[in-house]
Length: 105
Image (cartoon, rainbow, N blue to C red; front, side, top):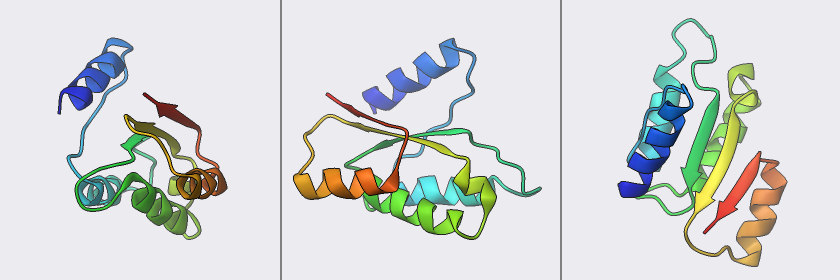
């Protein structure tokens, strides 16, 4: 929760309105609700690799599937933030997603 609060505060300091989700499924639900007029509401998505329920990789996989059907998902800039290391399998899978950046700490 502290990492979420810090990242959200940093975004808001840069005049970027930020909203958090506490799980991968909550993230997908918010993305789904954000399109009543079919306009892209979210521009950036920061995901942790390890989240309750669906992982960051699961969320990215679902977004990429949705992007095949709806352009608003195709324009979403995705950043993966993780405090742990990545396995070689995870690195290859993430590379195939062509996300915007990976931050490892």
